[in-house]
Length: 467
Image (cartoon, rainbow, N blue to C red; front, side, top):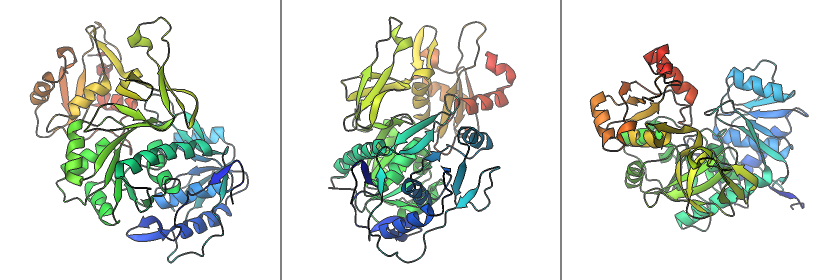
């Protein structure tokens, strides 16, 4: 029985049915609740929790245990020493939950989360009730635009956010609920997108999750084949492009979700033709969670979830291309939250995406964005991966874009020729640099810092000054 001001850890579901799958073995909702209760009883009193589990089921157990114990789960984008040092500075008492027996963190106890036991568990008396105002998760931005910053999400905000996404997915699938849908995801659960579109769609949307995080195409194909239909693939443009280029026989997928970067219509169409399901792109951010979606092959217009609405703030008399600012509010987003992108509003719910506000560039009086340039670079036949880079300083005031590409079968001249048909002449790169791989993170994101480091390593220190 729920108490006023609370909501359940799990949405109504058949607890005897699979909550998760591990290498083809089902793990019931009863087993999940038993594992959550056992771990919650082991948490050190008063300590904040860092959830570093890589296995998606064990991550969900750790998240559920923290919620049942009334604790906030800290979800860093990585386990690098500098990231954990920042968490230690902000939280004097910490406990790390992990599934890597070799993991050690200076000054922080590490509690191992065991795998699900064989066999089912005794049915739980009731599903735990969670305080709606509990700060359930503290996510850190990936740092792609600066120093990672914490963003706290209340349990009720998370519930409302997943509710909107669940409704959109059930409409897409033509099903009354997500019961029976199994999610295979290539993105880490500590990332906002990975958290909401895999773990929370199971906990609060009624779906089931595959416990793994496959990365290579053969592993993704195997993970899909190991779970029953209907099934969903939650991925990124980077992972999806590699999967479709591998030439493997792929099991059919009923719906695909993609986020973290705009997806080209060509790749979306290829994905739907190869895998059989509709591809839905998710637009969101760590600050607000999932905001909108679109079916890429049908339209470039995004539509917000639920009660969320977008507005353009008055630029205060400045030039529109310098001061454009957009905010989202409604539903799970209680206060107006600024978005990092430049949009073109069709109305309060529908918009087109131009690119990140901080990657707008001007060359010879013309305006574009790095996101737009990268979109066209990665749409070229033969380009496996690519990114534009601009030097920090330009002594003569003329920006000269450089393109880094993974394109073993194309020459620099062929890349430039392909871009000439897609971009205004001022944005066509003067130089194309072939690399074996771009330094992307596990989510497929390429941070400005990592790309700059690659540019300086390949082109020399003078490259930062446009030389």
